[in-house]
Image 1 (cartoon, rainbow, N blue to C red):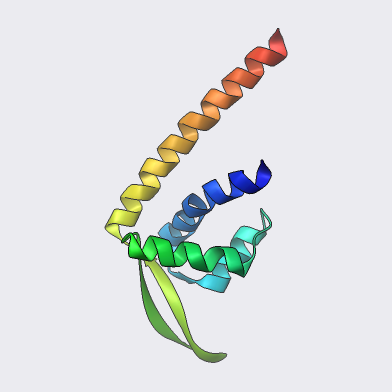
Image 2: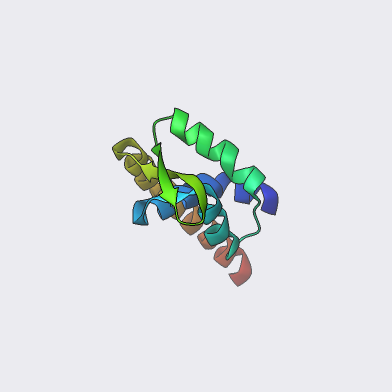
Length: 106
């Protein structure tokens, strides 16, 4: 169940981080890994998919520590998708919390 929850939430988490600032793939992995266990192999297919969907744009930026990095920037469409997903998550979480509280109080 945890694996499926992570997969379902990963897009929302990535969009949330990109709303704050443009980031490169490994930077996203590092930040998300502070809270949940994910790998680089998980993030890059997601980034390709949400780029295809128009939620993010990619650009190269020179790095002081080696080759240029591909940064991702959220688009207006991605911001709307983020708001929609956040609303769905909040509603779902509230419904589950209510159900669990009800069952614990019986």
